Length: 434
Ligand code: GDP
Ligand code: GDP
Image 1 (cartoon, rainbow, N blue to C red):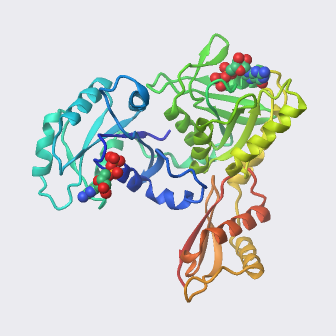
Image 2: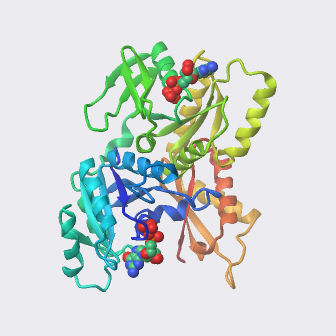
Image 3: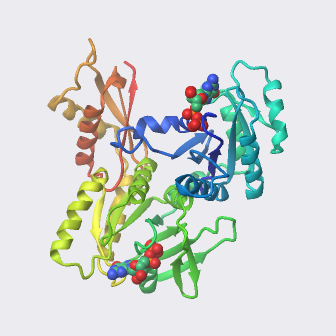
């Protein structure tokens, strides 16, 4: 499971700059999710072989007692409580402030491993910059420059030191790893109980770690699945039930840990920002996706039609995924739902040969050439596959890095059609050369 690093610190110390640096390589790839990237506080990063999740907590006002700032502080605390490591960002230019000390006190009480990053340290004398911040009592402070990338890798490596490198054979197990996610009350526990009620549960494993993650192995029509890290669930007697509190971090971890995500939404409620954020994160993560619109039982045809239209409008950016209208309670639609899970998994894991990719690319260009950029017209020459789950298609050629978003989308659409990649995000990367 990917470790989570949470960034805290008072406003203006450079948290978002650090966040952007840590998540940068991914940003370029996800930038074309319309309108959703702006207000983003969760991202993926990687140092060496180790992937991690990073959470930017925005403001942190430990003294505010109510209102929106209080709510933000509460969510920040929750994120910290669930973090594997906290990077506490302070500002070398302003020096230690009383506000920093308050945050430090709070962090000490929450008992997570904390690494102090003294930011904006570029051009300052090392040793001197950190001196001020020993007083925080949170161990050796580390000078960094988020803006220039200095010291950033070092502090992240430290924070992740106790986490092993991910296993290489993770993908080779023949079970499909499925995460069921959605906001509270959409029916996740009901779905799990219905699934497990009728099928053979092979194993149930709840290791007593701090994260109390759950994995459930089961078989369905001869296929093997692992329900991974069912966010916010606990087992009570024979059934699973949701823990009241919705956990963003747990949800993100289960998405990371899955091959296919079932995003559950409630047909009897409007799509909320929370639904949209979860959906956005699934797209960013690159996991295959099936949408389950639950509580479809007993709705009249007019309401069903309204709901369909509302979903189409609000979740338009999930058009690569299949939507299923189900009733977890009455066990309706689950067979088809799992058929889509299987096909989304197959699409996510497809092997695309270089000759076929290159042929589809050539046909696409013959139909419509990439627009000129300045004096040059980008000339894609060949394509190969750069990864699975999500499939990554790497396109080589001269000036291909100048290809714009709309042509990228055209290519994506063409590849999707040609290789029937329904149910999985698809990434296209351009490598300019001769
Ligand atoms: P946040 O409010 O903590 O998220 O802070 P921001 O990331 O928005 O940064 C606040 C200001 O500090 C911006 O003007 C940044 O350009 C600047 N800043 C961030 N990191 C550095 C750095 O490493 N060096 C310098 N000199 N400025 C920085
Ligand atoms: P969770 O918080 O996502 O795990 O949601 P629950 O599984 O606890 O379900 C929340 C409520 O929705 C419960 O009262 C369920 O009985 C109800 N519910 C779940 N699935 C369905 C369904 O398919 N149809 C209807 N009508 N109610 C459902």
